[in-house]
Length: 186
Length: 205
Image (tube, rainbow over all chains, first blue to last red; front, side, top):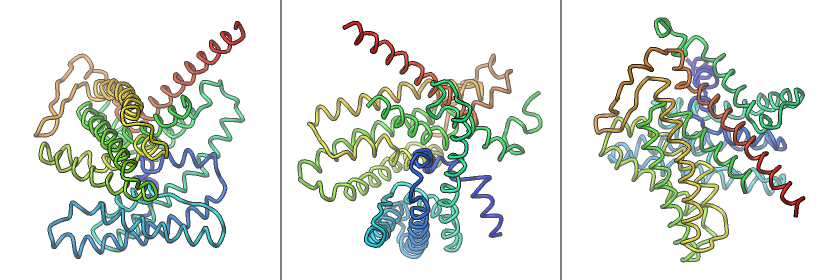
């Protein structure tokens, strides 16, 4: 079950490629490769703890009270509180800024939305953020390969990166995309 | 600013197009949401500036942004629960997109009129670019034009296009990436032409 969830949310239904969570940040991150690991560790701690706490509060407090529609507030406050704490610790210890809220918040929101148990919420949130950071080295390699080919200037502003992303997505979902399913092309 | 605007457009394009079905109806709803959130965030920014709350601006801003999305989603549920369910995550994605965050969380607030004119102009241009894209993907992908109605979406079938099935590729996420790649290439090409023309004019002067 666990392996299935990990493989499904990392590759087949990656939050990056299917939901678009963090794609913009990943593309920006390929230009600033310093401290990415630290940023990943911080984000992982933030989303895991936030996912756990948010799911617990929503499940035991908001659902019985009938105010479940307000759950994004819980996710936001958890992410803000834990993120600010982690950011302070990192700045004091390693003098590096890893400030980031949007990606963590969207990952927690996604995981609380998709989960039916506390464990699932924690796993989903950690896989969600991991799948985002897994794409950074992949995109860096793609960008390097593109730069070796010295493309026309019109295609050098990320255009070929998006073509590459389309091909990666087709490869990942090759057996599942609608236009390859039997009966679609008559 | 032009180059920065292109990156903001790319970020928001991904945020809107990737998670949503390639239907014109959803495009209309999500672009309305984008413009609504843009307008409201400018007003919030004005209120924060007026009340001298700049030191806690990000926290106040994010909380109000989430509140606005919850409110918008409730209105959407009242209108059409199916559309609200489909657009659920997308509403949060656009609220935290580079458009809303990038334009609204900068420190300098000139005046309400100038901010409204500046930010809403970009939001309007973006909507005008996105609407034909949604329409084209709907026509190519499904051979229909769709409109939002309380029961979900209403389809107007176009018989000529339904025969060309392989074009359904453009309704998929890889198809959206290909459209984005082509748009970026065209924008970059046009931008370079403008730079060349401006360079020639400077040399002539």
